[in-house]
Length: 367
Image (cartoon, rainbow, N blue to C red; front, side):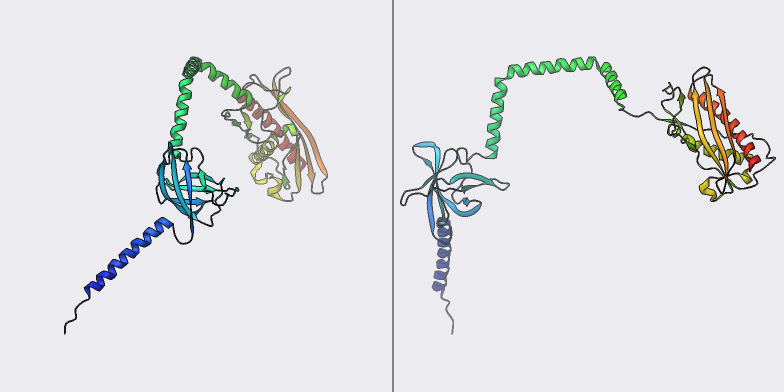
């Protein structure tokens, strides 16, 4: 027995489903969703670019309805009338502010509602007036701003032309006096200590070599601590008497501060005399039998009278108990024919060689 398909019944069901979907869409589009709705008239005092029927309505940023109708005002073509349908519970008042916002990267327009406190009388039709320029997009705002700038430029073209001409005259003057300006800036840098600092030149004190044969050597351990000196001598600069700056010595530096330099070269001198019994620094030797204590009194160039290099040291040898075994004041000077760094260092080398030789001979006799 053959089963005949109920084609009429199936077709009727499909047609009814299609009509139901279309009906739901139509109801949703016109009523805006589920729940009671209230319609309000909105009037825009200018163009509303991109606003369409179905666009969203936001109250304080929350979607509450849609635009249901758009049209031009019959009595004034500049105005645009719109009908919005919002949830009845939305607190729309007579003084609620109406605007138009462009959301997202594509700038989709939506109607915005904000605030309001004046409640309309019962039965009175409520028409909301949008703020002037509410429909102005960012592009339109930019165009209007550029139009205003262009107007300002046109109105002030004469003074602007004179200003540009004055700038050209000023720049031409700067170009003609570039060399003078460079000199002025260089002078200001020098006066304020700015600019690239000059490279300092370091000079060392030479250790004397020919100190004679070690006929007598140190019979006990001897240490040479860092010499003491007044604060003025705790420097790497060349010192002068009278005090002052001398041409050619602005970039001069000793290899170390004067007391440390004297200590290092004295130890080197003892080593050149007899390296097997040479003294060391206090920190290297620990508790030595004796210490050679040096006080630097003078280490300078004297320019009063005959220009000369002056070195003066006070020396004491003390034992482990702090008893002074021997003491001596050693000083010397060396004539300086030319006051310039290389000649001054050579004179200090010659003077220090005599000082070192005298101290070594005295020390080996005392210890």
